[in-house]
Length: 395
Image 1 (cartoon, helix red, strand yellow):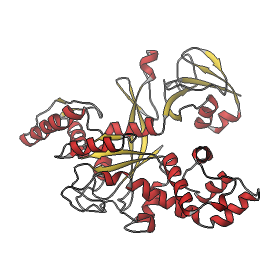
Image 2 (tube, helix red, strand yellow):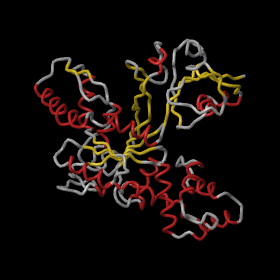
Image 3 (cartoon, rainbow, N blue to C red):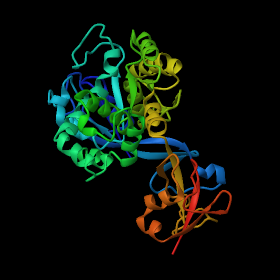
Image 4 (spheres, helix red, strand yellow):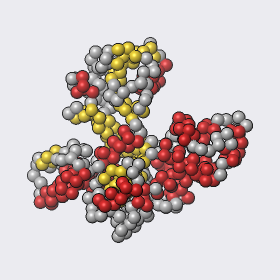
């Protein structure tokens, strides 16, 4: 699963990326630090099934720490976008293309108001202007793609030569937009779907905005939340945009904590609201850790980095995790590894969806399945729940 970090330059995206992945992304206080997209592995936390079943697991595609399964996601740090990126301004179209593969977007904004939309230093920039900036750029980019030869395509639809949903998907090929997503957009629109040739430019723009919302949903990482004026700006954002997912974040604090933990100075679990001092810290380290404790963890209950990742996975994308096994008694694979793998699936997915996710052969040769918690036989249309452990029976 891919999640992209996006936003205007100089908002702390690279710091967020490095904190989430402990990678060595270049970090600097000037626009366009990130030119080529950085890609790394971050993790989201879920309760591991090992505790529920009272077994010791041997994870293969993930990790388990004290009963918490760390499930990997691909995090892409896309370079900063500037106003007019959809027209090619800044480093525009290349980076819009880079984020096309992502299923959800984390928009990193500077909630202190110290940088403007182009990443330049500012005194009191209105951070609410950042909220609609990224979705707007993506929507206009989608509109530009849809508009190409739209009249000709619309006439083919009206003459019954192709489905409207297929026409839209063909135009947006490569953006990982599915037919169910397009159909969902159509179910919400007031456009005359029988006469797409009559759609105006504003109609195509509105359709594009809805496609963006469904196919590239956004969670806001309100970065630099510990700086002066940030609390008030976050309050204003929540008031102005009550339906937006907005997470207070201090990416620099998360990066400092993870580095200190890696060095053995502290014991820190990503996403926790506290840490334990282990080794000898010098005065500078003590001062920094004390600041993080008081200005970030005490106020916001976490640095927000892990929370943002999990909001993207579970709130925006509505994912669940399921553990496939081959031996329902031992909860293991053929080699004896207990609860070896965990897979993301969309909420509402069925057993056959899991079979397809694991391997197409399992779906083709599907006979049935067993819910390892209840020991009951279940069919291919059985809807899975978060944390299910499932044995798939095949020919």
